[in-house]
Amino acid sequence: MAQASGLPGVIDRVDERAPRRQTVYVYQAPVRIWHWTTVLCILVLGVTGYLIGSPPPSLSGEASAHYQMGYIRFAHFAAGYVLAIGFVFRFLWAFVGNKWSRQIFVLPVWDRAWWWGLIYEIKWYLFLVRDPKKYIGHNPAGHASMFALVLMLTFMICTGFAMYGEGAGIESWQYRMFGWVFAIFPNSQDVHTWHHLGMWGIVVFVIGHVYAAVREDILSRQSMISSIVSGERVFRDDFRE
Amino acid sequence: MDAPRETFYDVIRRQGISRRSFVKFCSLTAASLGLGASGATTVANALETKPRIPVIWMHGLECTCCSESFIRSAHPLVKDVVLSMISLDYDDTIMAAAGHQADAILQETRQKHKGQYILAVEGNPPLNENGMYCIDGGRPFVEKLVEMADDSLAVIAWGACASWGCVQAAKPNPTQAVPIDKVIRNKPIIKVPGCPPIAEVMTGVVGYVVTFGRLPELDRQGRPKMFYSQRIHDKCYRRPHFDAGQFVEEWDDEGARKGYCLYKMGCKGPTTYNACSTTRWNGGVSFPIQSGHGCIGCSEDGFWDKGSFYDRLTNISAFGIEANADQIGMVAAGTVAAGLAVHAGVTAVRKLSGRDDHHPHA
Image (cartoon, rainbow over all chains, first blue to last red; front, side, top):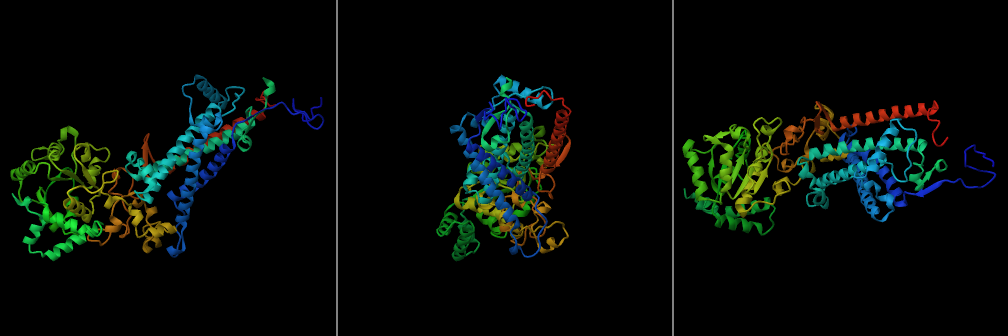
């Protein structure tokens, strides 16, 4: 049998036999839409949020001729709303979506196999083991980092809307719903500080998330980047086992 | 000491104020409290019929700046408040009596007007060494405070000291000074924070309690909503410069001369709840931002411990380092990025050098 590509099991041109590859539909359309919407929101929120904390150089001329901080804050609030609504939607989707849609909201700390998998993943990243394991959903390290993101997004949404409620007034629904944040941090300055730290936490997450996605896409035994576009997890070496 | 049985109306008529002026005063007070059209009648009725409320004003660990502010109230004049609206039975700083005589008044009020007097507290009690850091009349202040609070109608916490702790409770707080709500738990407390609070806010709160015989509506943190429900930033006259993106960058730059927003100079206006930008100070003359300096957030919880007055980000001190959130965040993000770059390098070298040749997809 001709193997034009030189890869075992892959045949093209001559015999139109599909390669025996396992494919699982993991990320359903709403999950993928949520993912990419959140990516855009985090980008906008991170940049505008940083500029709100450290504004660009002062503008001259009449105040009535500019609305720079106004636009920056508007973009921040608008993206914040989209992120929050998307996050609520994503949470609700966990109830109706497939079983992998629930994964990021629950960390199975009671599961010994999960802990074993996490340790194995850490070893894999420390170059201590030969091959990575196969996972349909997130691997334990990815699972833990996604769970951390869920916590960070929750924190950012609560503190963000609490501060938004300060401007909207104590009669606003934002203040009524999220004003309890000020019971934890009585001084709003602390809420601002923690909101900044939360942003940096998400920046660290994004760096790790993108690195791991690219690295796993190249080195692991399943697809990564194409999966969050098409939704399908493709296993590349099913013939080995 | 039967003066407290007199009503406010009796007192001012005795002082030669006409009925016409009295009604005018009621209308103005009702308007300033935002009470609507029928408010004036309510105020007038209250002042005509209710006996003047006895007020005990105690001083703990404090600097008397609250009293200094209070006596400068212009609307209403503090003279009217102290001599007519309330019956200020005890205030050791400004009363004529001293020593045992003064202490006797305290006990007398407590027995005679049990459950009817207002306890106004300026300053706070230190708890370390059983309260020995503040002795008042031979006893720890904290004992006297709790005793007087027990028989009061309600408690007013004047200033940042009584409300939050202020400078004497700032780190490391050697005397263990605590805000009064940590020792008074059985009475409603109105917090009127500020260092000091605005004079008109203080007399306004007293005026409200006297008029209605109840506490004003309080927010989540126990502050009267009518004066503390908006941030300095929300009502600042420099706010248009903030929205436009026009900032003071240096104390002596063009922006400072033009009165641009002081946000970049560390103004705490966006995180401070007070009435400064509307009521202003010294009879409405000015307030810090109008005078060219940022707000230092003196009416906020723990404002001494939130880093410099000229930085908007709180310093976080841990593990012996002190840095703000952005510095910490940038170092963390940079470290992670550098670490991952090294990791990527090691991965690439191992792959290219063929040490991972056994890898599944080859």
